[in-house]
Length: 330
Image (cartoon, rainbow, N blue to C red; front, side, top):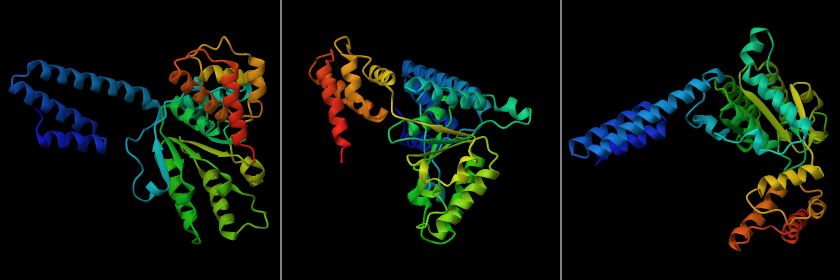
């Protein structure tokens, strides 16, 4: 039986991300069990440690070319500015128009082969602006880029970034760009119009103009291996100077009829869809976003499980789609 000190050491090493200490403590537990005559348990623990170290070595080897991946959340003042998580989403999880898919594929290829490009004096695309209506997949795209690149996704928290004190927001923005330079990852500025608004608007305030000027300067000087993703539902509100600072501006839209069918099939693939009238479904889904299609499909999937009815009928799916459409009505 593990001692109290060993249990505390295991927890402490897990919290701090000290992998080697975790495995060393686990081996101590195995030795304790062996001394107490629990040979089989001790052998199983040692095997698990060996397998864990082997798997971790493989992950590190695969990620080495991609740059360092942190194992802890941002700390200190950055903790109020950035949140981190480690997505496992992939391109296959998204339903995209051919044009958007091609442009994302190009970004990923340039990132994966960034060393070849830099060796030729070329910089891979790493500053991307995503524009489009709510629920069209912009935030999911940032998760997919992070997942495909095995990088952490850092989301910028504007409520911690923007303050009423002159100069303080720009100083905090510098901290964010210092982190972008120091730690490779995908950095998401969601609802980007909060700081990227047109400097010529009459209701603009001087402090926000200074913040935007600082952002433009930091973005221009940025030379990191990170990927910066800005997303907005209101491209018309953005300052025009921003567009040329990004390597790619990708426009998202509502799903076309063929993409509606693909999205529904992707979300309900485990159920029987042979009874569906796709023209009826597509008509009911017209004007809905990808997020709304996913929510309606999820409602139908839960109903199928609860009613033990694996065959989805057109009436059930259409009702769910219409309910989502009614929710967005004023």
